[in-house]
Length: 48
Image (cartoon, rainbow, N blue to C red; front, side, top):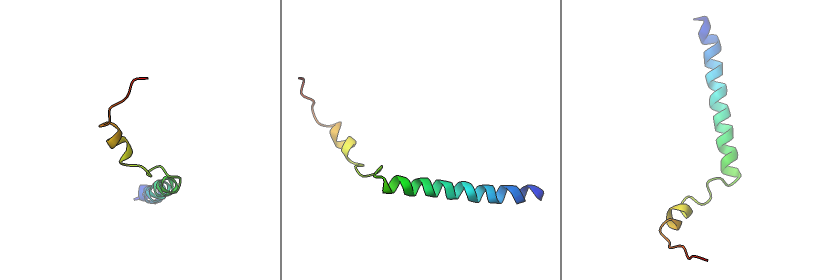
């Protein structure tokens, strides 16, 4: 039972850290163009 004193706060802290990183990624524009790469693969490249 003593391990739960450590594991529950650790799990909550890790979840909070993940949420904070995810929110930062959303605000910094990491997910702005989800369809761009999918449509670029279908376009022909012109050789220069």
